[in-house]
Amino acid sequence: MLVLDRVSKTYPNGVHALGGVSLDVELGEIVAVIGGSGSGKSTLLRAIGGLDPTSEGSIVLDGERIAAPHQKIGVIFQEPRLLPWLKVADNVGFGLFDRPRAERAQRVAAALKRVGLADKAAMWPRELSGGQAQRVAIARALVPRPEVLLLDEPFSALDAFTRADLQDHLLDLWADAKPTLILVTHDVDEAIVLADRVMVMCPRPGRIFDEIAVDLPRPRDRQSAAFDFVKRRVLAALDRSLNRAVTGAEAEPKAEAGAALWW
Amino acid sequence: MSLVAMTAVAQGNADESSPTERAAGHRWARLTRPALGLLLPVTLALFWEIIVRIGWASGRLAPPPSVIFATFVELARTGELQRNTLVTLARVAAGFGIGVAAATALGAAAGYSPLVRRLLDPSLQALRAIPSIAWVPLFILWLGIFEASKVTLIAVGVFFPVYLGLMGAIQSVDRKLVEVGRTFRLSDVAMVRRILLPAVLPAYVVSLRSGLGLGWMFVVAAELMGASEGLGYLLIDGQQLGKPAEIVAAIVAFAIVGKASDWLIVLLAAPFLRWEDVVRSD
Image (cartoon, rainbow over all chains, first blue to last red; front, top):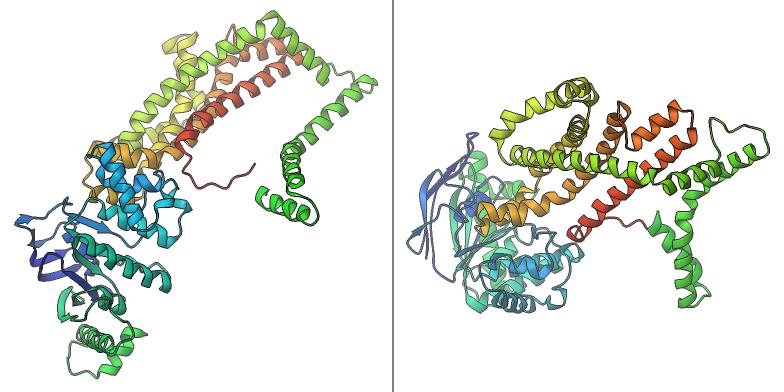
């Protein structure tokens, strides 16, 4: 179980990026974090990943305090970040450097097969398409069998078809070992397709503004009325979160705030 | 140039020719294209040869290609060419080795540690502003007129491009890839070996090549200032005894060993740089 207790972050330049975020995430849960720019989504994710230290508060995973990258936590970034000097298979096996060669080869082959890229094992990263590269990045993050997988807008650089494809694929992979997923995104559809819970954050400083449970059976139909209903709730919460940040008053008409978000 | 040209060739041939004919066309193109670059120098050389042969010029100060070739063969026959080339090669090798070793150590330290950079870099940059030849009198005073001062001069010439290249390369390593290493909890040593070293290698090879180029430049300077053997000595000898063909023969020898040594670096580095996404121009 992952427990965030009043996590704050102030950067050396004085920017107050996170203002006391508390959150409990159960093992195997999928949580999407969504919010306007400057709401501290990525800062929160980097703090959980141990990449940036927090200013105050604590992040505890299974009773262990997280202050640096942890072996139970994997990260998938917005870009694939494959190492260009390693073949695809070696990129996937990058996190298994302490395992015996035979085990490494076997687990890499299985992971590549699982993401449908078994035939690309001997290729260089530059020879892959954007979607393929991101799938290799997913395989690389999953191969060490993390308990928590952090995803920072992982599909935002991809075209709509590839994105929907990879979202389904991610769920498929998640079902293998059911790690905890924490996903930062700015795509409401993506949040609802994937997550059990959507956390809406508001800016200056970043806080959790609202929490919306997505109680829909998987696989989720993006066209269904129930999906649409949840989407409206998330959008409304986003509107209000932005409204409060922009004007400081809750009574502002929603239409205007919505326009501010979308235009 | 090549890709477009090759596509054009392929399309041009695609109309009526068979695949084998097309492949033959490619091979022909591959052979003839480098020859295009030889057209100008060979024409000029032939032109000069003819001018001298028909007596329009004496060719005493600018010997025709046949004389240069004969001199080259003669120098090779007596073993003088090989002996002097080896001496020069040994000087460059020693100076290059020392310069690269020092530049790699200091460049890596300055690139990796901001503290070392702040301590070291301003002084080295100040030294870099001095034309290296200006050191010669001092080196001769300190180290004498024999090998030590020559090798030191070459080492100084090699040092700066390699130092700057390596330091810059380390500083510009993609932080995002370093972060990947951090998420997998690489130790400092593993981070250097698995991320920094491969990331830095392409720029390092380029800096080695420009360092080597300067090494060849400085060996000429060092040998011109006083040597009893070496290709630079052949240059001076040719000047003092009025043998221009010997000078040109020595220049040709410089060009051959210089190019060969550069090619050697490229060849040795190639297996480590196959991942690079380069535009192939064959």
